[in-house]
Amino acid sequence: MLRTNHKAIAQKIAAELKFSTENTSIFVSGSIGPDSHADFPHATGKDRKILSKIETARTLYLMNDEYSYGELGNALHYIQDKWVNNPPDEKEAIFASDDDDFLKSVKQMKTPDETAKEYLSIANTLLTTKNTGIESWFNHAWGIWHGDYASCIYVFADIVELMLPTLQPDTSITGNEKNLRTYVRSEAFRKATQEGFYASVITNFLYPKTSGYSAAIYCLASISPPSGNGNPAVDLNISYRLSLEIARYTLSPPEWFKFRDNWTDRITDQNSKRNQLTYIVPQYHVLITEDSEKVHEERHLRFNDERKNFLIEWPKIQATLQTVRQRSETWKILLSQLVEFLQT
Image (tube, rainbow, N blue to C red):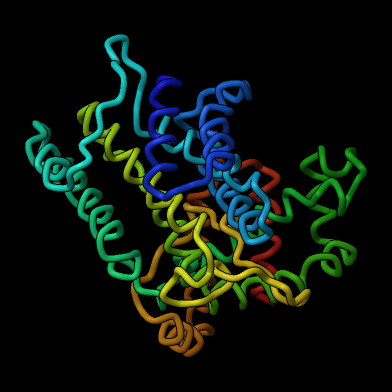
């Protein structure tokens, strides 16, 4: 997206949400800042950065730190670039401020039926959120959960792979497949990982990663363009309206929300932590549109069965993983040893 359009969206949002002159300046500056960060391309591969910056923005806002506006501006820049390409004939932004005109433009798009349905669903979500509140679209009791038992194991393998240089600094061991296999069967590896692994699987399977407004913000920030061909004008307007709703629910005081949770209020208890958006990995997590307590009870009842079923299916899973190029051999070795912990 052109810098002029990033700036125009930021100015329009600032006016809509009545930012102060100083905060508007910081917000607008933040919205064009990533073009100076040299972390191109901005349209892809920035999902974790978007979530991290939104999380930081909310934390700073609750601390009355003006740079919350800059962090959010950064995040929205990446979202806007994800939605709007930069074709040679791109002109300055023209926004459909009227809701009916916006919806009409979406309905009149010339695109395949499935793509058209996706666009209409996104448009209706944004209109609902704008006009009747995020609670009208998103139930506060819903949560982002691990999709299945297997994903709880896979994500711990990710963590151990990341921590491996700390667990075993000797590169002659971690850099050699035979030596690595010997190491992961050692008592040292078991003591370092087994207890944390069991606790991680239980926690990740039985409890949502985020719930309430954190989950809602995650879902908003994760809305991406449909896979089919879109319309540049419609995409521009969706990027504006999506940015507006994320800004509304990131830079608003606690009393503005219908419910109160660890997104709306500053965490002052040292033993409590905000649900971290950056801990959510899209390939493992899904939104479950049921009451979190109900899901917890159901998962608690079938936890042991899920473990048994996974172990029954493990030989097939293991065979399939051998052909998966996206996973390193180190990860596959670590995963196999974690499964052995489950088996014994």
